[in-house]
Length: 119
Image (cartoon, rainbow, N blue to C red):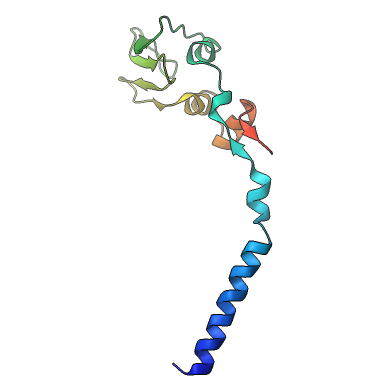
């Protein structure tokens, strides 16, 4: 590679790096951040969907909201709010539950749950 080409490529690289640091990514600046600490505690969250979680720790078996459940087949964590149905396979966290219940995207669920900061 000639000396001229090497110097030219080096200067292009420096210009690109200085342009990236001078101008923040405007798309990323508009996004905001998802703050999961804004979620209500698991008991209060699931109560909105007629699911009672009792006690203070561990997993509790409840009837699954995503299929016609005769017996409790879904485990819900009292600590972090995750869920797992052993019959239909539904699984996720509180945001995922909201997404599946309302058939909405992640962004729409976060907006509805008021989890986005700086948007």
